[in-house]
Length: 516
Image 1: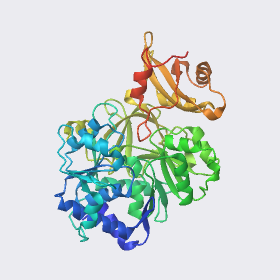
Image 2 (image 1 turned 90 degrees about the horizontal axis):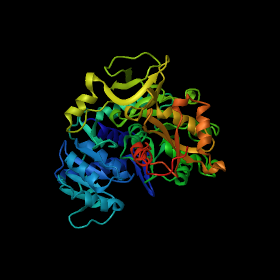
Image 3 (image 1 turned 90 degrees about the vertical axis):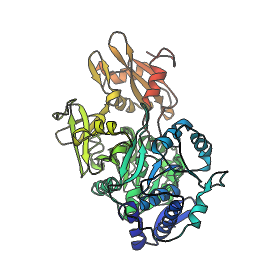
Image 4 (image 1 turned 60 degrees about the vertical axis):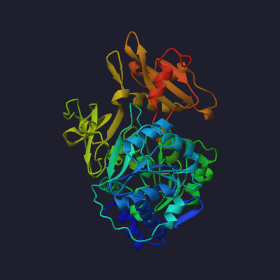
């Protein structure tokens, strides 16, 4: 047997009484977690689950999420985490596309789950109610687990077997299922351990980023491997997250950029004792320098990571010693990751030249589920093509300038929205900002900014003020021609801006008053 399941079995032997997970008022040692996942695996076998079968889960952050992942890993079955923010037709599509046989869901998500089950092509045979009494045709997760045998699970699992299928956000077209193997996950742990600060058995983290996304497991799985402790919160709320970090003496913490920004907006931030923190990390979207400076001024070391679902996820790391002087960069390639910047013909480009970032390493996924053509296109030449435009400097520091599809071409000049957004972030009156391209009869496209004013600033900036601010710091063709003000920007669960929604709303005639 190999893979995630062996991590838990070995930790139960080495660190049996060490706390693995805290979920509300429930605390599980490694010995307890190992036994529960053996029982769950045996219960799933009783339902007919075999190696390679898919077990889908529509769950909030919980120990049950990790139990299902681990039990499937012990069997060689495949977990399919589903974004709980999806609509029923989207849930149904993933159930049908993955061919899931078993489907587990929480009570607060039961209506979405049940509606998703009615979509075309869904062939789920067993439904598991997690934490609530089952309706007709459903089984109780707790009853299945507690009634199952405690016999050790000894199925043969290879490192090349798929551990789970994570569906990409699907901001364009239908989402694709990225197949991540046991070896992919182990390679990501190696990359994490080889970073500047690394992780250890004594580390504690709050798992609050959504676990259905690879970023939510960034520290969860490495600490499971090492024997550390995960404090699980069901969802993000700034005050409860700060409280959990302080009370549990958290030592390492990953949050997406939008979450870190929200924490810094808590009025009594300084009343929470975060002195145990030795490593903090942002990702999912560019981190505003003002937020980094806020944490640094309070002695909280901050680093940034860059990765994708398809890379398990770590690709680059910007260590805390460089986070200010190299602001805007995502750092250098992780220890066991190779990266290149190439043109449209996959020819290497010199430092300072913008091209597509491509990646190679043991952390790169096994391909897209049931989509051989999409896999071949993304992984041509043995390199995963990220779709991200980037440039490297002479020291190997990578700057992501934007997604290929987000680049704005105005009057023949390329404008990378991230560059403009970083300037807007520096304005004292701006809490959040997004830059998109709008139609322009003369120049083809025009630069459009959508801004969330910072209520703590006292007064809101004007459109003219922000345009002038940008013009003092950027070439004029890069500066916004139109500025919109909104209360918040649309983001998905991983903190990524939903620029498609912004384009629909703000680059047409309707959608608000254009300020010039």
